[in-house]
Amino acid sequence: MAVPELLDRLLRAHGPAGHEQLAFDVVREAVADVAEIASDSIGNLVARRRDGDGPLVALFAHLDVIGLAVAHIADDGLLAAHTLGIWRANVAYGQRVTIRTAEGDVPGVIARKVKDSEKVEWEQLYVDVGARDGDEARSLVAPGDPVVLEAPPLELAAGRVTSRSLDNRAGLYVALETLRRAEGANVAVVAAAQEELGQLGTAAHALAPDVAVAIDVTYATDVPGDDAAVGGDHRLGGGPALFRGPSINPRVFELLVAAARAEEIDHTIETGMRTYTDADGTFTSRDGIPTGLVSIPLRNMHSAVEIVELADLEACIRLLVAFLGSLEPGTDYSR
Image 1 (cartoon, rainbow, N blue to C red):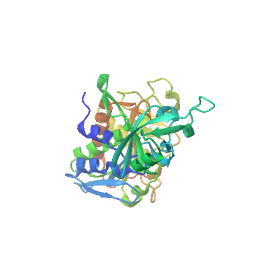
Image 2: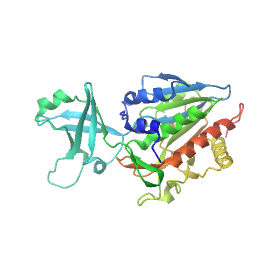
Image 3: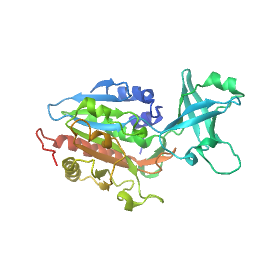
Image 4: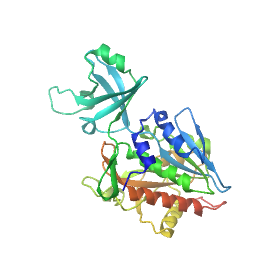
């Protein structure tokens, strides 16, 4: 199964946390013909479609991805870097990277300084761009320049794809495709900023939707190390994971489940105290926004080899289009 063109473009776009504007053009071009588009000073990009007079539904899918930023350029030409988002040093070591500078992209690799121990800690890692010395390195990059892993999409067996940034460009793809297919809906897609640094909820406050649904990824439990006992059993090919927990409005959850059953879409139920997604910052915004969460099972989260099954993305789109079509004005979401 070929990777959809829009998903491929989203996965190849730059834009780690705090630098979302580097991926804005891909989002704009995807829906400019059907939606009004605006951005804010934080880095949220909002695409709104006003086809109907029903309740305004906001689909939140964060645009930012994990990455690095140049912290210091040493006299030997090596670059110290700090993380943008939470991920492990052993995931970064040995990876190729792309640094976005004022003059364009600069390639590099993440290597390590071996001291008295073979432990791999973040302070032992550095980015090598091949510069002979500090002066040459400073002519190429500057402190604060954002860095992402260089790991473009690769088609695998069974309709699966591996890539960097599937968390959460896969979720954003689902949101944008839902917006395109949801004819007659009053819907906005929020390509949200800085989710990997903590869920902000600022776009929810400004947009003031009647209902919100966050779209993100969740840990697939069909690989060693990810335990179904933690929050449910979610497998590639198992369809959307629908969250049930304190930050999720019970009525929105019920409507999502009903839509999945009506469309005969395989799905699982995910549980937990918090979602650790944009849903956590959205449901408490203003006087409280009725919020749901739809997640895509993902292997190897926060790495260069994240994996999803494309059929799960299509199932999420079908579910959300059906959900939007089921909403009625005046629905009571009080608990």
